[in-house]
Length: 366
Ligand SMILES: [Mg+2]
Image 1: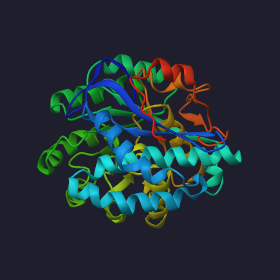
Image 2: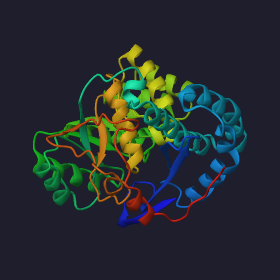
Image 3: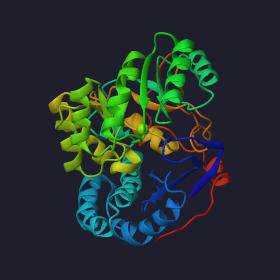
């Protein structure tokens, strides 16, 4: 468990993020090669406690003794065994988030064993850089944040909304005033009812919002479709969608323009590749959700290096002690894009000493 202060807290429309926390999964092979994965535990504040128990008692006993090169087979078996438990528990998300950490670690381990990047293992690199967008401005201090984004060369920026019409409009105005003609996205984090979202759509369109993320419940595709039908707005969702059937419904929906699987939530590299395959069929853009630590960042860049259907990658603009400081050579965006690492596995190396310095506790299963 890695944990660090989140610099006074980060406001979201549903609850502030008080700490940067992630569960880092390290899988070591018999010949001493280590692969890393990350499981998302931003919410609730105690999620890491549950995750350690789920990994220790539920997931890792099924992984020991398996071959990393069979990551797809392992993932399928884990899902077949544990997804039903997740449904019975009423916790399909935490199960998937736990599987995500193991899946990414297996891909990384496979890559480090063979000297190939995850992108190569997945079928080959298709590019050397990917567009990023700055995430996320607001709800306060938008002018200063926007100036920092401008100075960093960002060309696309996401603004947090869902804090009341007046605050939302102020934030969008402030961002536009500083940034001018950039692509502006808005994320409501599921703050609104369908009628509330419809009522705000004209204002959002007036400010040139390119896509509106999770205006209503992110897994309620019928409401997202209705919103699109009634307002014409491009809708993005996916960070709170679990299971390939649910992703298929999202991708097949004419109301959803952008699907946003999170590699550390939905089921790792394996699940994200499947979502990309679905999205290719329907022309839906895949813009992976990303709001965590170093390994999730690196793994997401590997997905982008392989899957041409990925349009842009989310880039957290706030100080994050669990991302760049944990990487030996952190990929840093310039002029709105980031170079995609080509090293083995997740492409970049972790700084073990930096990770140790941010470690809350360690649990070993052998
Ligand atoms: Mg979001």
